[in-house]
Length: 596
Ligand code: ADP
Image 1 (cartoon, rainbow, N blue to C red):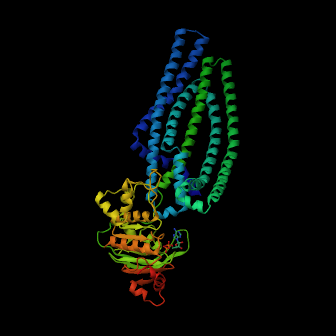
Image 2: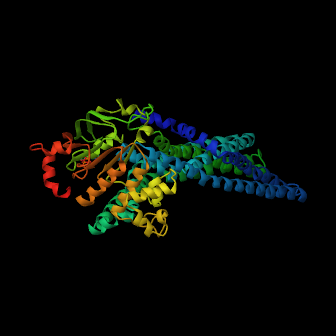
Image 3: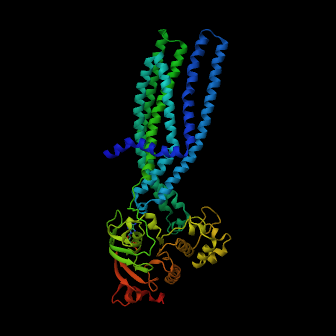
């Protein structure tokens, strides 16, 4: 708790130090405009503060028309010019607001996509993403919102310095009255801010849930299940339940803010009473003229509004930087897995699991236990076992989506944690069972951001059996998938999606390919055909095939049979099928009719 408090004190500084240098590097024009805006807004009120007493004293005294016209002209022309210029700079700065928001949103999206996979299942990390997103967009107003507070702070400080000088010269006690009541207001405002920040923290979890219920579930891909399982009422009920929680949070906030707002109004009235009383006495005593009386009233009001403005700016700045700090925290979110810097050598790779055990974070069931296996270069390994045996987990560890708890995984004799992460990831092209295609064109889904000669792409499309489908489409491989961006987008069948995913994995030209049951929706015979066809395309590369069926076993060099997190049997098809009471022999006997 104490640690958290200490951090809060530094938050404004840390946030400004993070954002301002980046914003300055990319948007210098914004800061130049800000500087002009500060000066214009600081001198704006002084036009009427200086001219009004001159007009009043002239009206009550000499009544010189020429002088009066000059004073009025200065107010009208000077005031209008300053406010016009200030408005122009305001508009220019607002244009920067959009650009800066997009810039920092893109930066965050990149970070989300680079985040260690393990964190995408971590509740704390997901909450942090939500806090960063809403903290940056809604609550802080982003870099624009924060910078505007800083600009206004400087502008208000200049105003205050000028007005205090005037007041001290004419009615010194007025300064004391205003300052004292402002201190009280500051206290009230800081209490209000603390309440609002606490409410924000309570709401961030709820916003993530609302995001899921209100946005993700509108995704038509959930539509079938929602209709067929009649889940609509459950969704609405959940929505209402969380809505209730959200409303009670807003009520909690409003109940606490009400007395503070009332107290603020009372103190304002007290301040007005004291000001008029004091200045009136000075006039009666002949210490100031009517002109100066009015000047002091305007100066007092300006001091009050500038001081309130300044305090509000400081509090707003603290509040907004606190919200935006969630973004800074997210950008520096600690990695979930260890990453090294060793380059991956361009040699045929040997992979070895040595006494590997693994338990998923925040759970206590050992999913893998003491797994030992060597995958030689170019070997085709089939990993089989019942659902839940740990096959996918084995692949996730190999692909560094998680780190092992115990034991080690070696690539060419060296622990995989020591390798440069992206070079290591470059070795694998897996197709996971829950692969997802993007709502872009077929071609984009296969090549992603790489380039590729059309001819090669056509060959690949033919190899994975997508040519016939592509020929029926008017735009061929440029046809969009799904209907997010294009109403003519296609909804590919499960089989077609698998073929596109397989084409993507082959296109990557990585030395190790992995098929993790992407065919689970197919019948055993169709699955066997796809695995066999894929195996031909894989050729000399290392390949790992996962299935709870035996689709790939007959043409693979080795078979590892997983059961309850362990490799219970290992060998070739011919060896395992003859093993008395063997798991594999039993599975094969049950499924033999599919694989002849
Ligand atoms: P298989 O691929 O053999 O069907 P998995 O490796 O997917 O098995 O799962 C093995 C066990 O690990 C299962 O009991 C599953 O519920 C559990 N498991 C899988 N993923 C996670 C996860 N992200 N968090 C916690 N437990 C998980």
